[in-house]
Length: 341
Ligand code: SAM
Ligand code: SF4
Image (cartoon, rainbow, N blue to C red; front, side):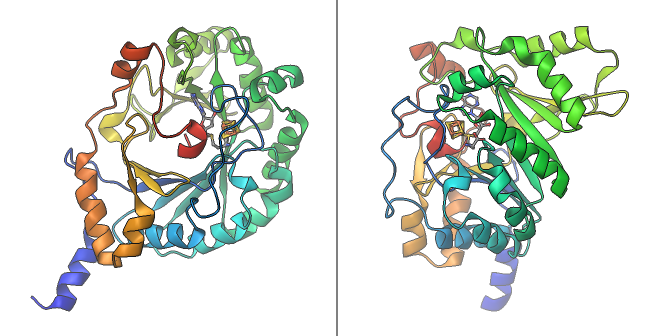
């Protein structure tokens, strides 16, 4: 076989791990910095921010995505920290959208700066957005985020709706004793604006596992308050979320249950941290320095390196072991803001 033919065949090679899972999705944390300090994500005083040299450059991310896109990765989620605080984010989205093979670009944001950037980002190629929102009450929003600014988030959501983002998903983390009494208010909010709502199980980083309210508990509360609330994702999952809808079609409600019902068997994702480290699983601390690899190797060698590395991706996460040891989740290397959720 000629060298040229070998490299065309290599190009078509998908990223398949030892469990037969096809990796098609990359989550990229573009910054560890944030304009909020949510109680479940960051310590009150914040964390020492990465220096300019430590943070992965847009050029490196784009090259890495390009390499993976040649091997079947088609979906990229931009996250953080708060992605909208990094300079040049719209230009980055535009460059991502030009990479052949990347058909789905999305972003998770706290929405504080969304009304400022929504239009520019949409024009740059971002068409889907997830907005994290844990309370609809200003005082409680302030308590959870330690900063406040709920009205800016509402403005951002309304503007995103007007511009035509589709879907718009609200990500809500419920914590026992803090905001669990807002379940029905959130459902009504989603139905009023006809947007999607997803409840993400609270992962007790440095907190107490008994503060987690499970997807099942939330689902039962909604079912007892609304008629015609039913599963719309067959009996299984749509990606990582179990999706429910209402007979009148207003809003979809999703449940992401990393703790009570792990979805590791169908995990198709890798995570790139703000410091440029590749993480095979949210719950395993092992990270691999992509910035160094990109410096040392050509594209084909980078692909081969990643292809070998993903064979280490575990069949399922070790959350219960971590909790058994400490009663909560503790990450060795990063807080959630550096990993991106
Ligand atoms: N700053 C952006 C935001 O808040 O949407 C993006 C980064 S944030 C780390 C990504 C997602 O992780 C958010 O939806 C947030 O609610 C979620 N998250 C952070 N810490 C969490 C925890 N301990 N348990 C569950 N979800 C968490
Ligand atoms: Fe910032 Fe998002 Fe973490 Fe809240 S969840 S502190 S908004 S990175």
